[in-house]
Length: 458
Ligand SMILES: [Ca+2]
Ligand SMILES: [Ca+2]
Ligand SMILES: [Ca+2]
Ligand SMILES: [Ca+2]
Image 1 (cartoon, rainbow, N blue to C red):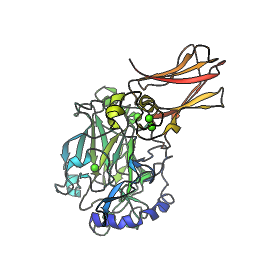
Image 2 (tube, helix red, strand yellow):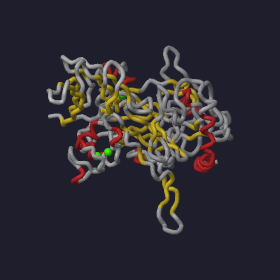
Image 3 (cartoon, rainbow, N blue to C red):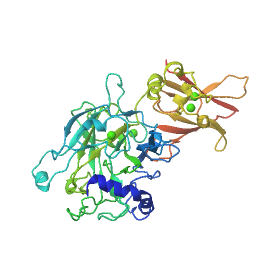
Image 4 (cartoon, rainbow, N blue to C red):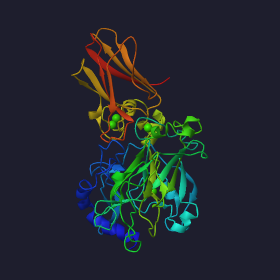
């Protein structure tokens, strides 16, 4: 069966499979193939969000017979606004098997689509080719250009997300069986200069070969809870769109990083290196690395299929943020309010809100409890030319005192002599995401009023 037919067969049964993936396949600690927001290791990130459901892709389905208009599945969803950038260019593309289908590397650029055929395939290798040191499939993506100079950096939590085109199995084809993920895996590497790459440490606990019969079971599945920090383990097909998070902090002790050759606050390239899953390639477990298994050998789009890479951690000025949201003319400016929700752009920018979606319910709120009454608010650590201050006073006719401040998206710190209690946690329900923080700042003794001021950094 061709990959295309296989995908179509899976589409009919995708909903049923949810039941199983949340039941049987959770022996190891890492995340499930989709919708596992509380996993502390690598909770998958939805490529699409909105009223039609987290991770449900907005996809063209057909043209209406009467009107001729395009009809979409999950029409009210949109690409996840958490992403502030996508791959802009590619280089060094090697398709290991030399096939020509799905060999357009440009399909890995730009926003995630949720379309399992909007990919570039890295190709598969035979056992003899692997033993003979044939070049494995790979591609390098670049993220900066003259108009978009801000590199990927290490901010709290995941910094970028890789989308492959894995799909969940609704019928038992071997491997991990029903609920397993047909997942083709790749190493992930990052670079500041495009020459020196640091590879993410990874774990693969898959106990043995995934493909038990090369003729009958080319699309056997693996259990994604056995896999960590390898791209490809999450589902992005048949209308479900999830990506794998990567946190640059995991590379803090890499020799290229400690030597200063790779700067985790200046990442301009991400490279994907295919893993032919016959067990010849290893994870980075010490002192005894594990063999990595994935479906092998496949046919058609063999090897890793790269759909998109989304950037989370990038410093944005207010101007760049307005560009990201497509604001033009009178919609722009710190005090403009294009969505009419009463919240000016600079406040939406500071607090991780959407300038074209009414969302005033996300504004700061007073809260009680703890050592003193407090103000609770979200803050986007990517807001680079912003000063955010929390101020308190004993009475409204008395001077305000700055008690906490964040500059340029940096940490929210007490301002001496005040020493307020500052709580700091992720505001995201997805455990891998940290760039938008949720703070509680408590008043200092005597203070009865708190307020927050935001201004553009001088
Ligand atoms: Ca990070
Ligand atoms: Ca794509
Ligand atoms: Ca607004
Ligand atoms: Ca808004």
